[in-house]
Every structure is written in C-alpha cells, then in structure tokens.
Image (cartoon, rainbow, N blue to C red):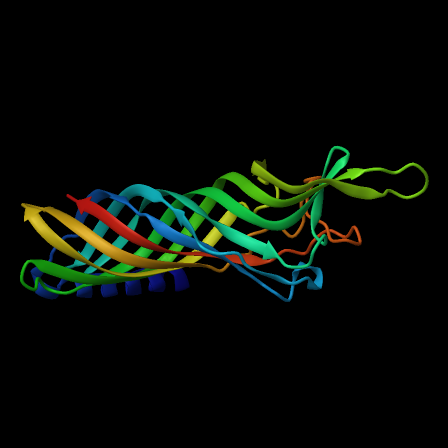
Length: 262
C-alpha cells in the first residue's frame, strides 16, 4: 500500500510539472561532451598514522562522454548518460623517510605520490533552466556521480634504499638518493567506487533546429574515501614502524564542459 501511494504521488507530481507551459510528453535529447578539468586530492590530516601530509597540488585531467536528457517540463530535465573520467591529484609526505613500500630487496621512501585513476561514471542530476534570453538559455544542475574504477596508477617521487643487512635485523642504506617511478600499479589500493556531488552552472545556445551547443562549469566533490581501508596489495604504503599506512582522502575537481545536444 505504501509503495502504491508513493508511486501515485510521484506520478501526480510529475504530471503536474509536465502540465506547465503546455508540455504533454517528456522530450528526450542526447549529445556528446568533453570535459577538461583541474583535479586535486583532499587528504584527511587526522589519518596517515599521524604523519604530516598535505595536498601536493592540482593536476590537469580530462573526461568525455554521452549526455542523455529527459525533459520533464519546459524548464526541468533529468540528466544522465555515461562518461569516462580521469581523476587524481598528488599527496606530499613531509616527514622524511617515514612512508615507504617494498620492491624486491629495495624500499622506495616517498616524498610525494601522484594518483592517476580512470573511471566509468553514471551521472544522475536535475537540470533547471531559464526561458531563452537573447540567444541563450541558462541552467543550473545538481546531482551525484556514481563511478567505477577501471584503472589505477601512480607516479612516485622519493629515494630508493637497499637492504645491506649482514647480521641481525634489516638495515637499509641509500641506494639512489633521488628516484622517480612512473605508472606504479596501485589498482588494489584505490576504492572501486567513487560517489561524488556534482553541481554546475552553464548555458545553451541553439544553432539549428533542436541542435544546441552547451557550456558549463562543474564542481565535483568526492565524499567516499579514495582508498581501501583494507587491501591485499603487498606494496601497500607503510610508516617507519612497519605499520600499514591509514589513508583517507577525497578526490575533487572543477571541469569545463563543452558539448552538443541534439
């Protein structure tokens, strides 16, 4: 009974909205977009085993995908689609020789790590727009992005130490005082899911018939931990006591969206 009542209520609200401005049926639109972005990490400084960590700076990333828009009324639409997003940023470890991972008989002590993740994203948003003003229609949107990781890599900057043990507990000495590693596999260390708030402002301009160009600026704020709390990866980061590093951070970006709707 409760489910039936809820369905009828939603149907009544939708019908009421669609009745505005003479809209009788939803209108479906689709299009393509590209989204260059500035992406960064937001580390939780109360984690990381009490070490001094900070955001290591923003990185230029990119995204592209399919837009689908279901018009509920003249000024209300439901947005979804499918996108490929490249997300990441950098974390700096300010405590010297305190964060490391093992690589054969060598230890890589990190100064910073740049995260480079690729996701398939399903956006779900409500779009509210104005009537046409001049040649433009302005809009705002708010919703969530549900993303699934398909690639996880990192670029590491630090120093390489070698095991020089002869007797007793392991002893590590400088092997390479400066060492950079590219495309380190961290697939097992990064959360499979990314859920984010997505808000944006933009404009459309009609160019012919039902075809419009759109421009928007979107702020995307991840609110799920970027890292797995537990991982079976042997290269999981550790502190200088040998304890696994407790990592917690958000991933965020601002994107400039350019697209076409049909």
